Length: 343
Image (cartoon, rainbow, N blue to C red):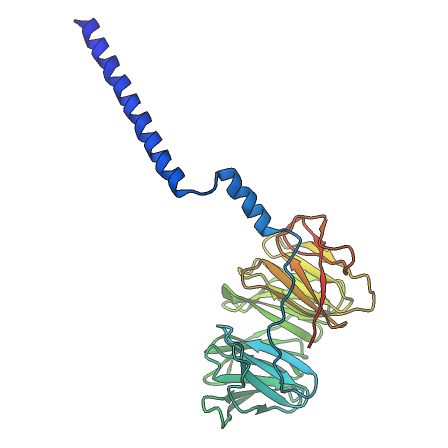
C-alpha cells in the first residue's frame, strides 16, 4: 500500500517538473522571439554608446544676432524655448530659440550686467551698475513696460535667477544674495556670508530650493531657500567667476579666475577634482552642467568652450592635443577637449 502511494507521488512530482520545464522553455522561446540582442550584446552596445571621455563634437545651430557690443549675460526660460541676452550697449533681447526671431521690442537697461527670464518669457528682470533690479513686462511685445524697481543691494547686480514665477534671486557686489517677492517687490530673505563681491549664482534644476553662489573671496557656498542658511562652504583656488549645480543639487562645479575648474561633492563636503589649463593666462568665466548631468561645459577667456563627459572614468584623456582639465564624479577626472566657438 505504502509502496504504491510513494510510486504515485513520485510520478506526480516528475510530471510537475516536466510541465514546469516545458512551460519555462515555451516562455524563453517567446522572450527570444521578442529580443534581438542577448544580455552580453546589450551590455556591449550600451558601453559603446556611452563612449566615456569622448564627448560628441558640438554642432553649430544658429547665431542670435542683434547686440552691437559685448554680451554680459544669457538667461533661458524654464522650458528653454526663449532666451534673454543682456548687452553692453544697454539692450536686452528676448529671442525664440527655435526660430531665432525676437519676440519683443528690446528692453532698455543702462549699465546692464545681468538678466533673467520667467517661465512663460513674459517678464524680464535686469540689473547692473545702478544697484537696482528692474522688472519689465513684455506681455505686449511692442510696448515693454516697467513694472517694478527693487532696491536693497549696496553694490552692482551681478546675477539674477527666477526660483519660480513668484520669487527672484539676486547676487551683488555687496557680497549678498537676496530672495525677492516678484509681486510685491519686497525682500523675503537675505543670504550673507561672503566677504567679497558675489559674482556667480546657480540653481539646482531638480531642487529649486537649493542654490549656489560664488565670490571673489575664493569660496563657493550652497544655500537653502527655505531656511535662509548656508549649508556648505567650499574653498576654491582663486576668485570664483562662475558656479553650476548638478541637477539634483548634490554636486557643485566652479570656474575660477586662474582658469582652474573644481568639482565638489555637496553630500560629502569634499573636493572631487580639479582641472588645470596649460595656458596659465586663461580665465574661466562661465560653467554649466547639462540638464541630464551627462556633460559639463566651461567658457574660457580665449573664446573657447571646454566640454567634458561628467561620468567618465579617471585617467582617460579625450585628446592629448587639447587643454587639460577635469570632470566630475568622485575619484575620477579626465581631460576636456577644447572646441573653438565660431560666430
